[in-house]
Length: 404
Image (tube, helix red, strand yellow):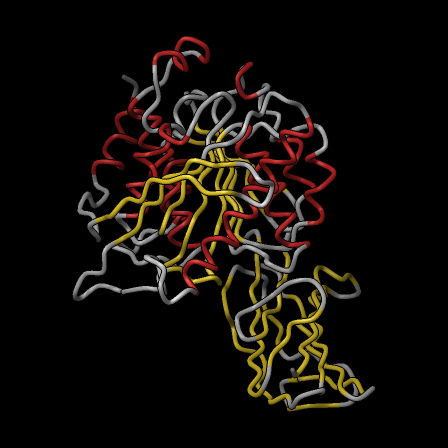
């Protein structure tokens, strides 16, 4: 065992082992939007005195090609015991080409809708347990391709996600053409060493096309079997073995990313980005920045998406920023259009001429409050945010709130 491996084992052994919640597991079969009968397992935390209660964030965790949901059962238990409601569904056959692939994409998007609807039903066993504003998708191998395309489908349908996690994903050729349609969100891609089983790291060329800053995280020495928990001898034979170290590392990074992205309850202060930095210094991972330097996302009352966000009464405008580290300051501009008039929110108040409201270096942040107002029925406002470095537009976003 080399020095880097010993250092990683020491890092993992220092992680808290206590689970936050006991679990209950629901096993069943549901009819998805496609008409397919989909077996699933649902792992749900049990509320505990003294700990954050529901609604909790939720995750749909998808398996890979020729596998099933049992290969992520321990990952699901690990996440749910730390406050993330986790659904592991089976796919219908992925070997049927494009029609089967698209059915699984549609089914995966529908699982998100189903969880939200169940949580909204007072008589359901998970009533009130899922926070529809904190939902993510994660997928291993071909499940990564399904999850990515389902995230795009949810965006197009007006149900954008909060987080997307790829686990040694193997995108299909068409997937790269879709990623630019995905709204900015918390995104991570963890991958193993290039091999035939991950199509020789075919996910890497997809990452620059995303509209959000992201990292290609290569776990050194890991195999395609390591994201599974449990895995089996068939995967080890076909994909070059596996290790408890690689398996634990995947699970730990998966949790830290989702904890941060979905704002899950936590036993600890360690962040996903800090963990990556420490592991990179130990020679356990290599991290290569991908995508744009910065992306912005406006939310109205905690909701975002393409087009109009319907609301009524008080309006709270917040901003999320996704960014690679930067030291140089840039100018932040905020404008709103109402009744045909454009006004600018500046450091000195609301003005009719453009002026920045702040000059700061881009860095990641969540839910910074920018503006508060009230909308009556039939009224609407469009908000616009710009990040400018000199004369160069670095990033922008717009959202319309409509009183209904």
